Amino acid sequence: MPSMLDAVVVGAGPNGLTAAVELARRGFSVALFEAKSTVGGGARTEELTLPGFRHDPCSAAHPLGVNSPAFRALPLERYGLRWLNSELPMAHPFPDGSAAVLSRSVAETAASFGPRDAGAYRRLVEPFLPHWDTLVRDFMSLPLTALPRDPVTLARFGLAGLPPSTWLMRRFKDERAKALFAGLVAHVMSPLDGLATGAIGLVFALAAHARGWPVPHGGSQAISDALAAYLADLGGAVHTDYEVKRLDDLPPARAYVFDTSPTALARIAGFGDLYARYRYGAGAFKIDYALDGPVPWTAPEARVATTVQLGPSKADIGTALRAASREGRAPDRPFLITVQPSIVDPTRAPEGKEVFWAYGHVPNGWSGDLTDALERQLERFAPGFRDRVLARATSGPAELAAHNANYVGGDIACGAASGLQLLLRPRLSLFPYHTPHPAVFICSSATPPGPGVHGMSGHNAAKAVWRRLRRTT
Image (cartoon, rainbow, N blue to C red; front, side, top):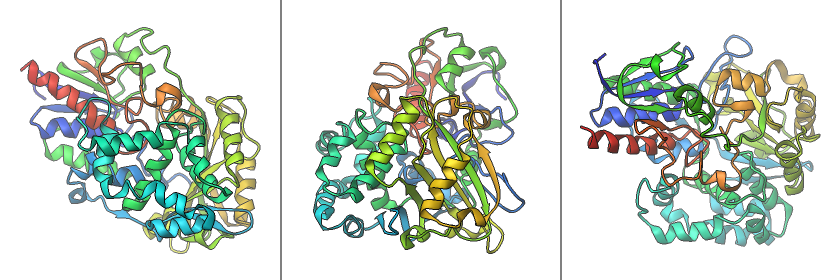
């Protein structure tokens, strides 16, 4: 290791790995330090239940990953990353056995909403699709890390997406479209009436139409391993089992980049109450299952979709989100996000078996057990589900935080994605990756564009870092 590194990165989640890669690609000397024994953060794969069942403890399906401008600019396929799409990116079943779907086809998606809303949906998404790659780059590069390439489309997107999703959903007349769209917003655990929540739903929908909601072959660890292998080829060093408690634990460097929560960064760097106003949101309660066969969904569409949302109506979903995020209680009927990777990747489980996971929202730091409520909701849409369970691994907020320290109180978004904090995080600043120390930066999901396995927070932060490194050469 050189006596003075150009950059040290703390935390080997997707954002930390991406930041390290971006700096190493530009010829800077980089070392990365990770407290756990493997890289990955929220993109790991482990045998959590039984031998041969390979689960993703955190994120599993990756609509933002496959569409990420940062990942698409890197040769990750050369290092083993292969995206697998199912017949349908996502299904949203209803208790009567029917389902709305999010298909690669706009027409098929619109048709699943019924005749009263098909036209409204097409008018909503079709103007953006021809400009998608430019739009997602502009949308995920804000604020001020790059000038918009298509400011007109970005402005049109802002007009549709900046108001609350409840406003946008007024375009729809029937429950099918409203419920599916409300479920899309709930992926970032944000109440439906929050600022810019319309943009969240739009991004997830457009991502599905552009490239699907795929899973990586072999599990989410494939994303992290590909980034780490590329970093190694670029000359970067990765140190695991290395917990950083203060800046003095790290080697001398010209810049330090933290893929950590703002709370952890303040503690390590001695920033006191710098992020005292930063809010953490609702937690998750997640169960990973080893199943003796496919989930017995009543709706045929759910049997061929990688991701399945479970919430009978917009009102049900809104009630569940409010209970967890505002009322401090676990919902009686949780809204569930479920992923079934085995339907496209047979390497994830022994022959004839399946891996499956489901999570619902609970208050931050909640210590109860949501298993019964979660499985009762599953049984409503897949009668006989419990009979297929061979083993389960449950993770409440405490277990999620132990697995990944960025998930403070079980908040898998590393900070409440609501109010101004959805757009301006981790504090009100035009330079969100900077800190009071000119050589210390933050690149976690607590910075724009926020949660998800896409590496764009790391990519954007790396730009701020290399500008400093160029100035101080």
